[in-house]
Structures are given as C-alpha cells and as structure tokens.
Length: 259
Length: 294
Ligand SMILES: Nc1ncnc2c1ncn2[C@@H]1O[C@H](COP(=O)(O)OP(=O)(O)OP(=O)(O)O)[C@@H](O)[C@H]1O
Ligand SMILES: [Mg+2]
Image 1: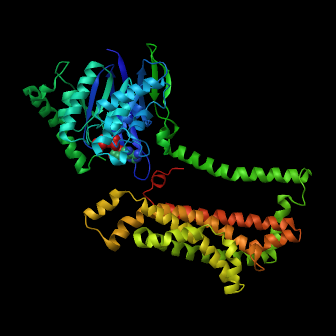
Image 2 (image 1 turned 30 degrees about the vertical axis):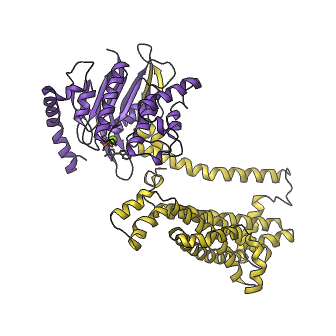
Image 3 (image 1 turned 45 degrees about the vertical axis):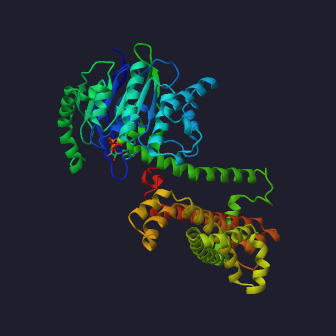
C-alpha cells in the first residue's frame, strides 16, 4: 500500500487568552484510496487535525505530509463542519467557487457543476441563495463544492450532521457507492459510530482533550459493501466494542478533567 | 484573518517522486512568545520609522534648497515655532478652544444620533416618517448652514458645537439603523423563542449586536468632527487651531500654519486611537480582539 497522508507526532496548542492543548502526539498513516473515519468526544481536536491535513493550521509540533500524484494541484478539498459557503453566491456559484483556484476548461467546470448539483439533489435550487435553503441543503452545497473538484484527498468534517435521518442515510449510501466506484482517499470525521462502520476501512478513535489516538480499528466488512451490513450481528458487535472504548473518553471530556 | 489561518504548505518531492505537501510548525508555533514580541516590535518600529524617515527627507530637501521653504519650511523650523507657540500660550489656548467644541459636539451628536438610529431601526413608522427627510438633509454640506446658525445663535461656541454635532449625528444614526436592519434573523428568533422582550431584549441582544457597527461609526465620526471643527474655525471666530492655520496662512507665516496642521493631525490620531481602545474593551467577542496577538 502507498502512503497518502503521513501524520507524525503532531501536537497542537492554541495560544491566546486561555491556551488549549488540542492535540498531543498524534501519529497516523492513511494509505492511498483508504477511507478513514475519525471519532472522538466533542472538542478532542478532530476538526483541528483535519484542518492541519488541509493546510489551514500549522501544528505546534510534528509534521503533516500529504503526497500528491498531480504535480501541480493541491491534493486536498474539504467539507467544513459549519459549511463555510458564501451567502452572496447562489448555490451554483458556490459549487463553482471550487474551480476558481484551478485552471480547468469552462465546459468541464459546467459539466461537473451540473453533475454534482444533480447528484446531491440541488438542481432545482441552483439559482437560490443560501439564506433561502434549509440547513441540510446548505450542507449539501458544501459537499457538492468539495466533490466537484474531484480531489485526491477528500476531508469531510461531520458532513451529514445537519441532515435528517432519512437523507443522511441516503447520502451515506450514495457516498458509499460513489467511493466504491471511484476510490479516493477520504478522512471523515463523524459522531456516529454506525456511519463510521458503514463507510470506513478503518476507524480511528481519539481520546478526550488533548486528543490522542487510543484505538485504530480495521472494519472487517468486505468491499464493495452494501448498506445491508447494518443489520449484521457483527456490525452491532463492532459498534458495541468501539463504544466501550469511547465511553470513558466522552465522560472524561464532560467532567472537564481533560484540560 | 487570523494569523493561524494563513499557514502555508511547503511543497517538496517525496521518496517515490510524488509531490509532498507538508505543514509543520513555523516561527509562530515554535516560539509563540518571541513571535508575538517580534510582531509587536515590528509594528511599533514601522509606525514610528515611516514618519521619521519622511520628516528627515523633508528636512534634508529643505536644507538643500530643493523645495521652497516659504511654503515648506524645514521640520526643525516648524518645531522651534511650535516651542515658541507653546511658550507664549497660544497653542494651549487654541487647543483648549478646539477640543472643547470638538468633544461637546462629538458626544452630543453621537448620543442623539445613536438614539435616533435605534428609534428608526426599531419603529417602522418612525422609519417611514423620518428616513427620507434625514437622508435628504444628510447631503447638505454642513458649512452651508453656518451662516444661518450664526444668525440664530450669534457668534460664539454654540453654532460650532451644533455644526459638529450635526455632522456626527448623521453618521451615527445611519450606522445604527443599518446595523439594526442587518441583524441576523436568528438573533431575534432566539430572543423570541425564550420570550425575552422589551428592554431585556435590547440589553441582551440588540445593543451588543449593533455595538461593533456603532463603534465603526464613532471612528468615522471622530475624523469628521475634526474636519468640521477646523473648517468652521477657518471661517468664523478668532481662536482655535483652525483659525490659527487660516490666519497664519493669510499673514504668510507658513511655519505657524504647519504647527496647526500637525496639531490637528495628532489630535485626530489620538482620538481614533482612543476609539480603537474603547472598541477592544467593549467588544471582547470580536475575532480581531479575541485572537489579537500583535
Ligand atoms: N481557533 C481556535 N482558537 C482557540 N482554540 C481553538 C480553536 N479551534 C479549536 N480550539 C480548541 O481546540 C479544541 C479542539 O477543537 P476542535 O474543533 O478540533 O474539536 P472537535 O473534535 O472537532 O470537536 P467537535 O466534535 O465538537 O466538532 C477545542 O477544545 C477548542 O476549544
Ligand atoms: Mg469539529
């Protein structure tokens, strides 16, 4: 297997009024075309880690490397937890924004924008402004923007968190199908263990703040996977197993002892 | 944008020839204290250095006869004139007169304007009744009404104060009104959902939400107030910095004129510094305040 992302002994401390030790000594390797899910209690530094892979934050210690096949284009694209789409752009313009930083023929952009608007069920709303969309639709715009640039590494920060349970399920299955068709490296942050098991090749469990990696679990289900595996007994078993590890950390993060 | 977000990835080549995009600790992460100290030093140094260099250049040009010293007397000469003017008390008298008018006009105009802005922002009727009128009045040059004010109130401090107040009043109500109309709906919804109304809603939601805008308005107002007070003193009265500048010019005392100009500039600078300080204290939640590290 070829390494795609190499995170080595990374620590992150936010300075400022009340400094926060967000991550401590995180080492993680993600292979090419691997789908890795990141789970951990709220505030443990998942978004922080993702942002560093994206190159938005610098670590306080250690290095984060992403290896790109393309000689020019940055390999990563990101779906932000708070969407980060622009209120002054229409749905279509927001999705098209992803191409601003890349030189791509106009026709190719158009085609991709159409394709991804279609796939995410946004075609009807292409001329609407975000203010007129529901939370779930805004999130889909943000997902479409990242997918449309077809990056080598897709970073997704709780992309389905704002969606209703049904749509969430549909998009999970859609993402599963998409990914199995066209394998890319994905780092996917989620709070849902079910989602993590359904989608991921590996599940990386993080501790309460300062975030460390406390478990790295390979999901035993074969690819291509069907959404039916949700009902398999092994599925529930694995979910229970991961939850057992996570539970203490969640408790710890609530008590606030993990400063 | 916060400094931590401008991180740049360095690119290199990996062992297998693929392109490697790397993020690693920079100066800022390796030694945050030293980084912050250096930034601060840099900022102060540049802030002082640029004017000093310009002044030195001016001095050299004046001494070398490259510029006409009747119009552009050397800074050293202006400085010695300033010392004289401080010595015989003229400068202090002028400054007191100007600052008095400035502050009274600024504060009263701003308070009345803010209240008007709140009223207009919160009441549809008031907005319908007054906004067109006020907008029309806004564009009348303030100096154009000075003769009228002089007629009504006679020569003295009052017409000047009113004029400064008027100028500031318009800036204040427009910024407050716009801020209220632009309030994100979610704030109001959260207030309604918890049944927070009336004065409490004002105190907990509306006022804090518009405060940053109001302070921007104040900063612009300060500049305008200085402009107006100097302008008014040009044309009326026989003291104040503005009068001194105009009078010095008409008696061809360029060095005294420059002393006046410099004092006005310093006054404006100090006042806007004060407003910035106020903003920092009053709006601790603003990202630029919370993450301030320079
Ligand atoms: N820009 C910032 N400045 C200061 N502290 C920050 C900043 N961003 C994050 N933090 C702190 O770092 C810690 C980790 O934040 P992060 O957003 O990475 O958590 P997370 O694991 O994504 O949480 P969640 O699951 O709730 O999204 C938090 O305790 C937070 O307080
Ligand atoms: Mg997060």
